[in-house]
Image 1 (cartoon, rainbow, N blue to C red):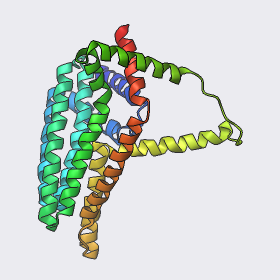
Image 2: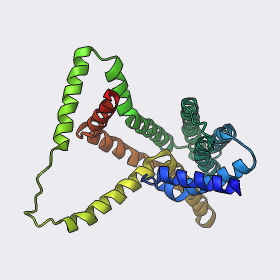
Image 3: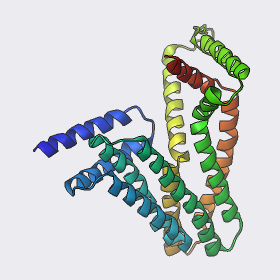
Image 4: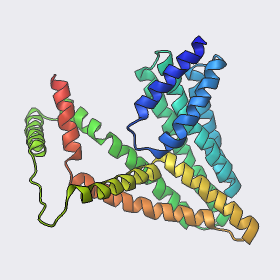
Length: 292
């Protein structure tokens, strides 16, 4: 009975940690399923290291299976979904036992890096061997570039902050701090509302909600988790089309479409980062926290 109460507390804590995330994979699949796996691991007396090992093994198996064509991609993507689930499990177990650490976070990043770095070459080789065409092979490497670029954008504020605090010359550091303060003051000042066009608050709310849903879907579809789900769906469609309609090439078409989508995202995200105050505001907030 005590174990049941402990797991209920773990479950409540994990949901509170992820409650505000706009990640559909986490909210509707990753977290509910991973909590069941965590419950099983705790019942078996397994710890976070066993979960990390499971994460690494399922990831490498999933990557290796990509070489075998559509069936291999389908089964391999299923193993990669397990890989993502175990990524939740090891953290949940570590937090449950109070053993979350920086070393664990570093090992988790290495785990991701190795599996992701193995997935794309294996997928490219598998598509090339299956179709004999160069375009799907090129498309996979575009997807790999997007995957690395997405990680760079996620780490960009932390990287700039690290350099700003350590390696930049003193004069440049002070100039950056002064300019960041100006950005913070401008963003904090109230902006005038313009209702001349009859744009009431009631009309703005639905549009804001739609933009929010589109943004969440975009984040979910462009993440590595989202890529894995879309890859699984593409392989499933390829197998269905080949079995019932004797039509091949669906998975290659899906990969090329995803590559085009990635190029558009690279251009759009780059433009957005350059012309927005998002990074500046985040850096300003972190600088203030460091000053305290």
